[in-house]
Amino acid sequence: MSTPALVARCPAKVNLVLRVLSRRLDGYHELDTIFQAVDLWDSLEIRLAKGLRMTCDSPELPTDGSNLVLRAAELLRERSGTSQGAEFHLRKLIPAQAGLGGGSSDAAGALLLCDRLWGLGTSAAELRAIAAEIGSDVPFFLDGGTARGTGRGERIEALPALRPLHLLLGFPPFGTSTAEVYKQASIRLTLPGDGVSLAILKAHKWPGDNDFAFMVNDLEPVVFEMRPALRDFRDALLGVGAKAAMLSGSGSTVYGVFGSEDDIEAAVSRLGNEHEGWRLLSSRTVAAAVHVVERGDKS
Image (cartoon, rainbow, N blue to C red; front, side, top):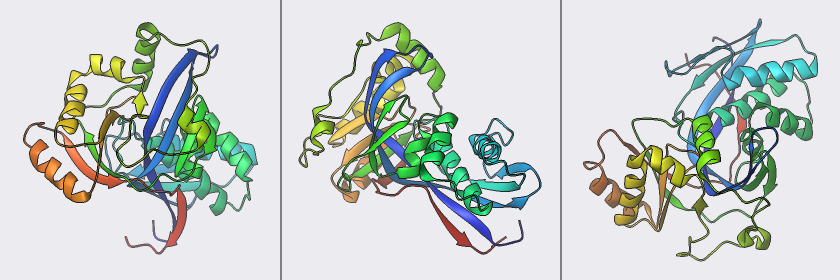
């Protein structure tokens, strides 16, 4: 890549709430969730090219048509009728199969980049509709911040910004398969037949400094049975002072809420030797969404 690039900054997310409701006729589950963007970013560059192609600095990540970046670009190209192409380069920091929405965030970045590079002027509503076709989490990343997701998670309602929280993200040396988790959830969970009322969402109010009782993830029993090490790490976070600790999405990330960066440093020093192979990262909640910037080529 030798010309100035457009770059999308693509944040990760955690789920503060994840309620799994009834099984839908299309095979998906009805969800009621609170998404929260966090300060962990992928970087996606784009330039004009013939056709669609991409490279990535993480060799384990596919760069063919199965990657959501290329799927997003192809779908936008089909809907717009343009024949223009693009070359992407993805600098990956958000772990895959981690419940942090990295692939979905990158796909949202690809939509914004292609729309701008190709001069399409696609409306926000159209972009959200295309995003929902790509994946359930993708529409959230066009809005970011704190939001409620219903349906498959693709129907997004912005919520008042959550006050900044200090998070410790724990990444195990393995991932989890979202498809397998939900398959097991269908077998093992007793799913309610109608919606779950979340008072905190209806009131649009957040609890006090020490009240995190609203945090719940219905997938935890299933995932913890499949991967007991994740439950052990959740318990370890609570044991070193986390105000709350929970699995994000279908995993494999487990995160804890702490009062300060100093508290996180103390927790890391205690946890580091006890959980071999785990990567621990200090982060915090942010109000940002995927956004596009311009920069000159540094290669």
